[in-house]
Structure formats: structure tokens, C-alpha cells
Image 1 (cartoon, rainbow, N blue to C red):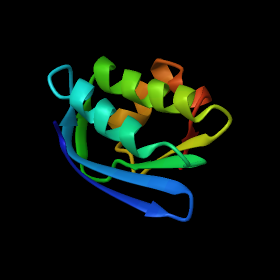
Image 2: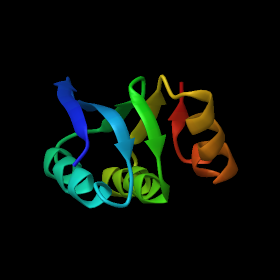
Image 3: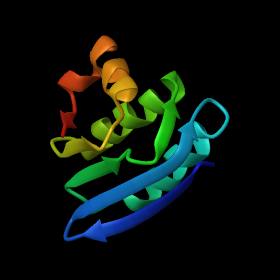
Length: 98
């Protein structure tokens, strides 16, 4: 599982992964997130220390959005490369990129 910090601010889950999210660690990362989601209205992914995200990591973002229903998923501090990946895959249309 990737190293990450998780905290709650009001009803928002803030997740700050460190390193990379790839096919090897994405399932465990997703499981940890899903345990924390009940009762939350939004999720903030702070990607300031994220070096790489694979398609498996992108699936975690989509699963989070789906699980929240009408809640928002925010991406903050993403590198230009990660922002480009989100744009090219059209995932950016489902997330709030800050």
C-alpha cells in the first residue's frame, strides 16, 4: 500500500499519498479509502508528494467518486504530468482539479 496521510476536516476526507499509486498497491489503497468514506460528503486528494499514478490509481479516483454519489472529489497540488494524465483520460471532467 502506498504511504499516505489521511485526516478528516468536517465531513471531508483528506488523503495525501506519498510516492506512487500503481497496480501493486492500488487495491489496498482503495480498500483503506473505502473504509473511511461512510459519512463523508467529499474527498480531497492532495497529490503534492505523489510522483506517479497508474491506470489502477485512476480507477481508485473513479471508485471514490462513484462511492460518494453526489459528493465532490478534489485533486490538489498535482504535478503537470498528473494533470495531463487526468486531462487525456478525461477523468478531469468528473473531478475538481485545483
